[in-house]
Length: 325
Ligand SMILES: NC(=O)c1ccc[n+]([C@@H]2O[C@H](COP(=O)([O-])OP(=O)(O)OC[C@H]3O[C@@H](n4cnc5c(N)ncnc54)[C@H](OP(=O)(O)O)[C@@H]3O)[C@@H](O)[C@H]2O)c1
Image (tube, rainbow, N blue to C red; front, side):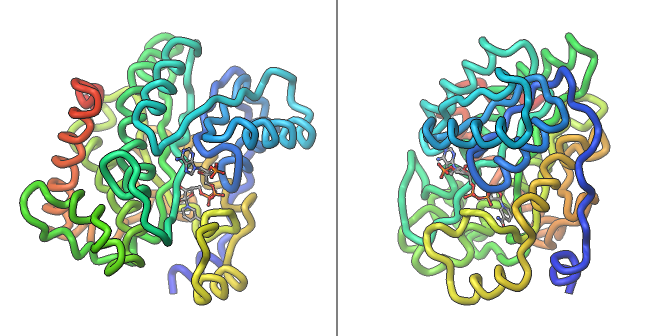
């Protein structure tokens, strides 16, 4: 009922305010929610918007479209290469953020995939690599820049992750996997085949686990950056490009928000501030995630997933998880 109410009756606040002087990065900024969020930021006067995209061609088309519709100053929007399916690309992107930008005020980790076909990227199934491992690798590697922005400009930057209410639709059956085997189990082709409908929800559940795990170790009053995650609700976008099921097509037809309406949730999370550190946001309000997160079993599962994720990140870039404190 909550989902139906939200999709049919909630009107999300239209973004207002000024982003003058601010630098905003949006991964997956060439399409869907990321592109519409970039359009709002351009309209609201952001000084610099980086569209972090895997296809420079698609990024340049999005930039041209946003420039034409908003008439933002030329030079506001830059297009940078980032492939979240490649750790090397994530590292190169983070290095560029560190070296080329004076400040980062809002970082939208928005790129995501919902796969209907099995692909492996790096060590995991692609949606786990893109939505989870690379998202937190990126966070760990750009945190020094966000912390430096906080210190230099006396601000509190935000790293906002586009998660999903889809996390409510899994009981996370793999939480009982053998010690240290949760990612391997979730990423196996056999699991993908058997639990296909769980895969995308689990990737979004892991995002919520990790955001909470970080904030439990680094609470808002001891950490200069706000890290939050949120659901945009069900929205029109290209996320189902792998081929939606008939049920999903029908649901989308009757219930989906426009891409623009969904993109408002990105700006809300980006502006939410210190009280949203470690939280999950729905309909632009801080909300309770699923009991698969909040129950005692959920807390145990969170610690197991977080432990495995930290070990994975340390293997990719030794020392990077120290930035979470
Ligand atoms: N739409 C919804 O109903 C909904 C609901 C809840 C949450 N979300 C979340 O919202 C976020 C944005 O999705 P969307 O709905 O706007 O879908 P979308 O239109 O498919 O946009 C996804 C974006 O992510 C990019 N991306 C995918 N894989 C990437 C990779 N390996 N490296 C870099 N970028 C990559 C895509 O780039 P390409 O164009 O090059 O593929 C695209 O720009 C996702 O995290 C999704 O899980 C969406």
